[in-house]
Image (cartoon, rainbow, N blue to C red; front, side, top):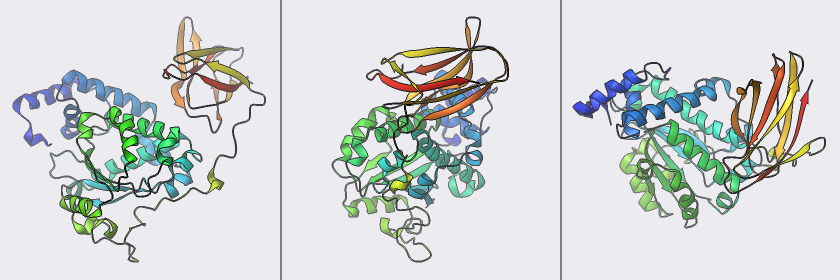
Length: 381
């Protein structure tokens, strides 16, 4: 969709929307950017504003605007997560390939924290916006059009390892939720190719978290390459598509898989794995019921004291935060965030500039089915 297609009523809503969010510090300030949010919420002004403001809060909390400059992905992700930009489709959409079937997702999650996996993918998404901004003629059908992405999701090599390891499912769901909430109208089309029958198990788990507009952009093909190559070439010129997918693009050395643009994944060497389960020595156990939270209070008698934490869970993630008590109010010091700490301990510290009572929160309220047991050590020095 572009601005020229708007009706008179839609143009008026866009004008009202711009006025309503004028106080927001937006990553992009043009009408095309605002149009994304209106389209995602069917031009419902109140819903669009709520969605945009929630997303701006999320960007501030996780410092998304500085992600590309400040975040360094773990080596295991840069070397073995098989995703990359290869060109542009016939609709001027940024074109990506993800070789998900060849990516050892279980091995990655035994070698990197779930949060790092999500942040790595978000870095790829934020790179897209940078590339488009620097070359709008190539990546936009017109100056008034919403820029979008086309994704080829290749499932060659997909196996039960992509389904049976729960952290893989959790990570996929988390990214879908982040996409739906923060990147409206990013996708033009998703081609899922080489899908085996067992992929339907994973897809059925993910579909409930997708907006209907997203589901309608997904095309799924089995291993019949004749069908999916024809579909790809209908949307993508041959010179923009690797030979392995039916195009004419190769690496300079003639490699038909274009591995200089998208690596081939592969089994993660165990040298990358977290060495072992976290140590419970010098830690205290704490059980947290499903849907519940625990607040632990610590008295800090002197300013310029350091509060340190070291904790892990026996299974799955837990939300964590630190507050300072001010009367009956809890002042956030460390923002509330879910931490995947079952394969590696979460460690950190804060400088307590003000004396008083500090509250450490372990929150399992998001889990309706599973209680959690954590081991923790909190010290004040």
